[in-house]
View 1 (tube, one colour):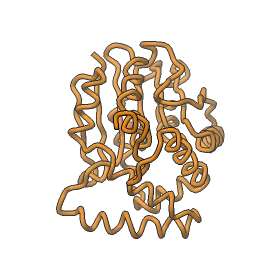
View 2 (cartoon, helix red, strand yellow):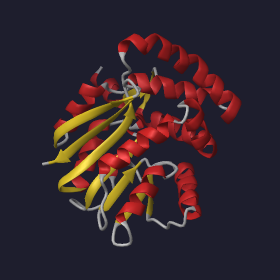
View 3 (cartoon, one colour):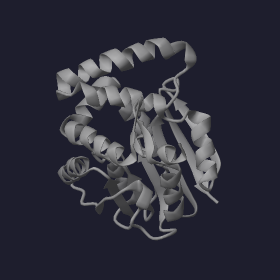
View 4 (cartoon, helix red, strand yellow):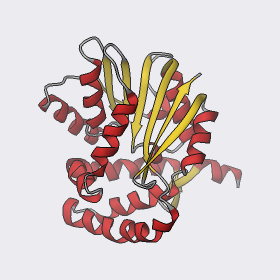
Length: 248
């Protein structure tokens, strides 16, 4: 029983082998990469832009800062951070998925930005200890198999006093949950089929959100990974939450 528990994890509502989850998650993002931004706008009614803008304000990146954007996808946060860090700063865009990273690279180049990129696993970051002033991960933590290991890696690469920002779907205000569930499990897969030609990936999206730790549980995980002063901001009635923690 112990061996089985240690070698399996959840992929949405299904239990799968850990290696199989990595392959399945990669398949999801390979499938949706070119339509990722369009689908984000449609399925959130543009709210993801408001959530990211709030995250950028909380990040308070200043000229010369070193920033690591993990699971950065199409580069929205990295672009905003780079413009604030300026020529003396260092902003890395990373993602485990090559298709997503390629889209992000192209969008950054179209914006006139050439940032360092790395295709890497958040559980094994290829960066030295205490290197960054800020680490961010937006809508990526819930797809990571070992969230505790990933959070510990983020803590490792931060300087003492550096901050981690985790923007992720979370637990909505309970009275709205039935309506939100109806939207998530019926409308989202339909939109995925119509716009991205892929309903299964967006069904996984809905399931992965439900399996992700709620606000207090994620805060506890961050504290266990070595973060202090952890707080969170509920956005849009808890559809999304921004967690902020400081490395002590």
